[in-house]
Length: 353
Image (tube, rainbow, N blue to C red; front, side, top):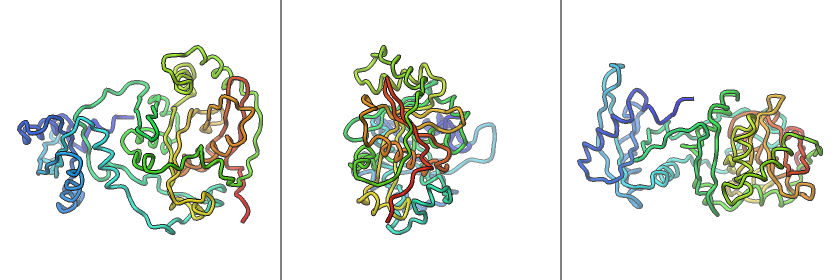
């Protein structure tokens, strides 16, 4: 998949940076740019309001910018350019996303949890894409490696999301799109603003009936045991995740951020006991033999776990809604170096009223 930051529609990123820096004439040390195409219809008042909001935390300015198209492909393109001076490009991007993030009223959900479990609910997977509003160009750009790494500032610490980019070619389109889009479009403000996480929610007696099966998944157990030799970082979880990516061609991503909000299904407040966003991070995402996506969580004492199945079910539920794929597309499990347990999330039964 092509790097989404390499092109701005028909305009080149390097040309945009050069033109903006000439316009700024050295007035910013670290100019980050948000280009709003005038042909998409954002009113100047909209751009100025966004610029004013960003100006509460950063030095900002707004101006018109006209860019030529490469290879003579069409005429010049006109933009409203918001320039934001900051060496913390991801903080700038997060502030833009939070301002633009859609706010839906409670009660706007159409699906029930039963609809989701039975696959009767289809949805637009693109809740939010920054590129639908404008083109963000950080002051510094990273090279894209075979395994792309991004540290998300999700309270209470940083979570390092890793994606084996080439392996996404074997996934359904919506799944690959979601995993790539996380680098630019993950709503970090939801993770920092809410303390309601899947690891906590699984202890709230949600009441879902899950048919859990012990399994001798030798590949998972063996990889977990072999990963004991990995010690490049201090975290056992992170060493295991890196080992899976390096030694298991089926592993696609690790520490995958997922979320749902109160308008994702009708009974959200009743089942979860809150209207806060629910967030989580999937330890390991794999491609399984039957073309399903495996949602796996590492638990150091898997045999003693009592709430892990519910936690992983919530991960699959969130991933299903974010990717727009039915729960039948997923397989769930948790494991350690001795045991593994799996289940099919679509076979879960909702709590009785």
